[in-house]
Amino acid sequence: MNLKKEKINSSLNLLKIIAIFMIVIFHCVYKGIEFAKLPEYNKFLYYIFFHFGELGVNIFMIISGYFLINKNQIEKKKIFKLIFEIYLYSFIAIAILFLFNKYTFDIKDIFPVNFSYYWYITDYLIIYIFSTYINKLANNINQNEYKKLLILFILLFSLFPTFLGIFDGNIEGFEYYNRILWLLFLYLLGGYFRLYSSKMSILNYSFKKLFLILTLCIGFLVSFILFSYLSNFYTINLKILPVYFWQPNSLLLLVLSTIIFIIFLKLNIKSNSFINIISKSVFDIYLLHEYPKLVNVLWYIIFPVSKHINSKKLYAYVIFYSLLICILGIVISIIKNYMFKLINHRKGEIYEKNLN
Image (cartoon, rainbow, N blue to C red; front, side):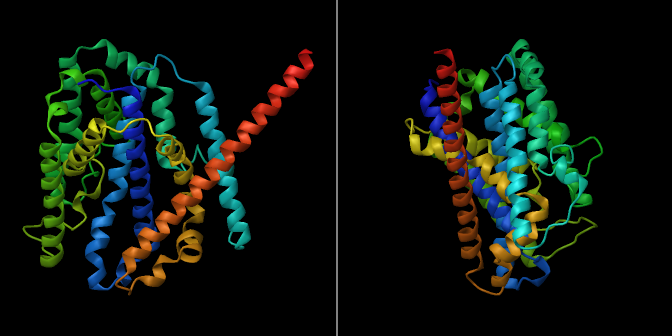
């Protein structure tokens, strides 16, 4: 399969935008709505949206592996830039808290990376720092060995936990499982698609067949949620809840995120400057809305989604507020990048002036 670089960039960049929107929707539902206070008629869609967050995270890491697997060395500038942005958005969050008189100092505020204020960014940085060695391993084993490694990951971290987790209702509850290992697997999965795309039969599937698989997965998820929601069953000590499959390593979420990735990988989207510019804001959107201390102010004062829990238009508000946060993050990102360009341009002028 011949995929042009610019097509991949815009296709997967569009997927990044969709993924961050899904994550914001999940946080809006998970952190802005008290489930116990929800009327019954609003619970079903709550369960649906509850799966969006981890699905978006899975997609992000697969894309990261796809683009980074051939890198021979890490970019120190990228690490420092990301750490700087973490502190920048932490400062913005603290400023907002001050504005609403909700800020109390904590020593952890000075070290947001170390104390995992943004757990995904911290884990991503760790994987990125070790990516040179991970990439060497991935590029120096043959396809068969690579495939066996991925299968081993799937068996231990997804298949077994998904089926055995029904006894306590927790797919992530296994002692040998942790998030960073799961993200490492997703990184390697994305890398496999990059290295062996020409040898993967699934990439030659028609869109009709891929959408059929996607529809079957979504149909199963919706049916499962509906059935468990309506029956509210606890059978032979199995604790199966409507959100059982929401955890990132559930086999269903893994299949969904992989199929969605493949569909966008195959999309014939030519290089689109609008998509590419907006996609540069995804980390900004994440950092803006995910500062731990800002959660209550964000979802209960600025975007008070909880005020609408009795409304039949509740999820219209969820989508609207989530969209506003994404737009705000994009605007801040564009202003930030413009300021950086001005600073760099000014530095260049000063340097040239000194040379003359």
